[in-house]
Structure formats: C-alpha cells, structure tokens
Amino acid sequence: MANAKTVAIIGAGPVGLAAASHILERGMTPIVLEAGPEVGHAVRQWGHVQLFSPWEYNVDPAARRLLEPTGWNSPEPEDYPTGSQLVEQYLVPLASRTKLQQHILTSSRVTDISRQGLDKLKSNGRASAPFEVRYETSSGTTQVTRADAVIDVSGTWTTPNPAGANGLYALGEKDVADRVAYAMPDVLGADRAKYAGRAVAVLGAGHSAIGTLTSLAHLKREAPETTVIWLLRGEDPARAFGGGANDKLAARGELGSAFASLVAAGLIQVEPGFRTTRLSLENERLHITSGSACCSRHVIVDELIVATGFRPNFDFVRELRIRLDSTVECPVALAPLIDPNEHSCGTVRPHGARELAQDEPGFYFAGMKSYGRAPTFLMLTGYEQVRSIAADIAGDREAAERVELVLPETGVCSRTSVEATNCCGGPEPAPNNSCCAPAQRAETSVCA
Image (tube, rainbow, N blue to C red):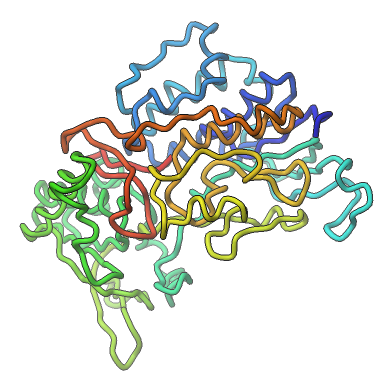
C-alpha cells in the first residue's frame, strides 16, 4: 500500500478522528464518513458517563499536534472527562478548527464496501483496485466514494447484546421494545422521570451494569418508591464486588465494597442464576422469565435495562475478504491478545497493523470494533492502532511494527477514592460487559 493516497475512515469518534489526524500527518487524504449528524455521535449518547481514564490518556498525539496551532485550550491532564466533555472540549475543536474540517462527512452512513469492478470471488488485480464505499445521506440518497485503503472504526454502540442468555433476543423482546433500554441510560439525569418511583431491573454483571445499579440505588434514596432489581446470570454476586481490601487497585476494591454495601443494605435486590428467555407485557407490567416452561422463574417490573455488552456489525463488509476469530469476532491475530476469558483492559499489550490487517489488502478494523465482542478496549490502545495502520498504509513498515505506546502500570488508573475513581486493569470481576468501574451518580464509566 505504499502508493495509497486516499483513505476512507468509517466513524468520527475519538479513534476515527485520530486515524484521520495520522493519515493527514503522513501526507495522505482522509475521507471520514460519520453516520450521525455530528462528530462523536455515539459518545454523545453516553455524555453523562465519566471516563475511567484522565485527559492525559484521551488525547491522541497526532490530534494534539493538529490542535495546538489553533490556540486550543488543552484540558487539565489529571481531570477525568465525561463523554460530553470529551466531545465538546476535544472532538468538536479537532473537527472544526483544524485541517480535518474539510475531510469529514456527517450524516453519511456506510452501507456497502467492495472493490471497484470486482466481487468477492475475483482475485486478479484485486490488490490494486480501489475500494468503492457506498454511503447514504440524511436525504436518503446513495453516494459513492473511492479510496486506496479503508479503516473501519465504526464501533459497536449501535449493536448492543440482547437480553437472551443464549445470545439471541429473548422471546418477545422486540415486542416490548418501549420497556427495554440498553447500555447505560442517564437514570439520574435526562431519563430520571422514566425510572423514578418505578420497578427497574438491570441485566448484566460487568461494570456498565454495576454503574447503572449504583445510580439507581442513589435514585431510590431520592425517590423511595423506586425498586431496583439486579438480574445476574451467574450464581455468585460477589464476583462483581472485586477483591475489596485485597484488590491490587485500591480504588477498584473500595468501589466494589461500596457496591456490595448497597446490595447488603437492601437498596438492590439480587436475582442470581437468572438466564432470561422471554419478555412479555401483562396488565401493563413487564414480565421477565428465566428458564423453560417446566421450571421457570419470573420477575415483574416496569422497565428493564440490558447491560450485557456489545457486538460488531459486519453487514456492510460482506463483499470483502474478512477473517474473524470464531469466538471473539475480531481479527484472528488479535483474538489471543484480548480474549476476555484471559485478559482485562490492563493486560492487553499494544498492537497495530499486523494484528488488525485483513486478507483484503488495505482494509483494517480499528477501535472498539476491532475487539469484536471483547469488552476490554482502551481508547489509548485505539490511538496506537491507528498510528500503526497509518504508517502501514504509507509504506513505513518500520514505524508500523514499532510500539510507541507504553501503558501505565495499572492500566490507566490513578485515583484512590470511591467518589473519584474510574479505573480498569487486572482481572475482570465478572465477564461479558465492560472493563470500566462505576463511580457515584453520573460518574459511572464506560470503555470508549
């Protein structure tokens, strides 16, 4: 790909804009296609959530080099931004005040990618044929752009895992969609009226679920009629509490202990071993069923929050030659490095183009999507991914192979109080959700 000059980048989130910054710095032309109406559209959906890492680790070096000549007011390195602050103080200035501005197309949802004039079966001349990227605009028209390389940084936010314990939608789940929310709704802010004084179940065992449960427990103190129920697929709630005083990360231990205290105080009811199979609406109440007809359990609530992680969408790359790990649904070479059965976000070593490249020359997954179903992604790791990919596309193999990222010893954690902590690293206290720890109120956290 030494002669590649134009690079299509799918997604204008933090890693997508970082990729564009590195492509520009290499003297190439990025075309950033963002499905949402503004940059950072997915991040805006969790704007109330505080990141687990401080500003020091959330600004890409190439992006910083673009911003500094504009008089950008760099945030305090040790402050922990919310999603909204990440967008307004970093992504918006990067997209509107630098040379990136002329390279970003918003309201441009990618629908298909192929090689110009070649379907998936054709091999002759494939490596030299440009990519044909089709995208749909806000007016519903289909546009086409061509590129020498493509970096898919579209993320996984729009494809959350469903409630069914078998990985499928629970029976009836789509029929009661107005009673089901996914990921981390703003239960103490914009969505407060939906949950205050209501019976709310949260399904999940990772930190996104714990963050939401913690916020709901605070809501219960303000609105005592609120009922909070934790639906736990596993049998042992203590796995989500962390190691307490023995945790290598004191803050995470304190936080796990604080969450355990909420459960012990009865602010959160626990339903362990609950494997959802069916959702139904009866007498205006949501009935959640676990198990089969012969031996089922039921929980009756008003609202359900499903916080069981995310999965990637590969629909628009089906005409490309893609190889994915059958378990994690990520690039094959990356799978053993990020398998959540073996790793947390603090134990994944830096990696780049070699692990992320596909059989389709010039096509790469990066960012959260590159991790498939693994919940252990770090934004800082994404920045290293796209630095390496940009070097590889430019033909600088030495730089592509070089590791320039040095992760902090404990992942990206530095704070030591429950009120101030958002961290990750070390073994996951529970599988299948997020590698990030919740703090109080809106200061819950998310892997970005």
